[in-house]
Amino acid sequence: MKNNPNIDNSRQKSTIAPKLPLKAGPKILKIDDKAMKEIADNALLNKIITSNKQELEKFDLNLSGCSATIVIQTPTKLFISWVGDCHAMLCTKERKFQAVKLTQHKNVVHSPLNSMELRRIYSNKGEVKTGLTLSGDKKPRVYVRGRMYPGLSTTRSLGDLLAHNIGVTSEPSIIIHKVTKE
Image 1 (cartoon, helix red, strand yellow):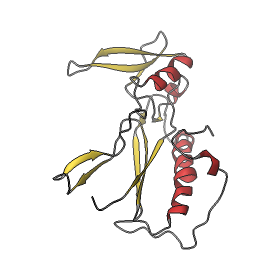
Image 2 (image 1 turned 60 degrees about the vertical axis):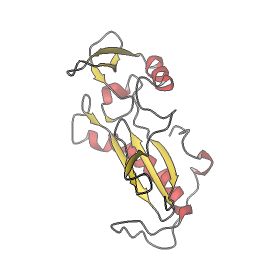
Image 3 (image 1 turned 180 degrees about the horizontal axis):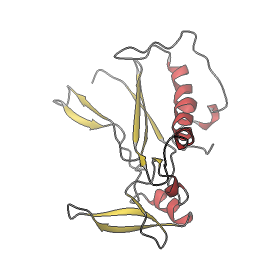
């Protein structure tokens, strides 16, 4: 497994079993933050990365894929993991019910516009071309070098196995937000 710069890699090999079983309710999971950190570091990351292999047996994922976002809430924290351009939003009372994008971070954009993502694509024999969308906007897309496929607008996805040969990855970004009354 590759190191994810968004998580604490020093804890990836440790195992912490919660003292109480997980109880999922409509609002929060009842579990302590230490065990939740372990889930975010290991289980969540591994589940997203290995989902490509499990789904390969059922579907042709060479040119099919999707984005995904997972949010786990504890009483004090939100653990957010995402792949691609599927984001999480939160609405707060203090901002007059203004939506706040929880997956927004200046260095964590799963797009060919991000220089780190672009470098990974080009170092794996992919290329980025800008073309017109149906609405007339110009949007960068990821292609096999010298070809007109797959044409992804995101640099991370679940599935899209052909694109994974040219630097697209299923490794999620993980952000932890503190929950406050605001």
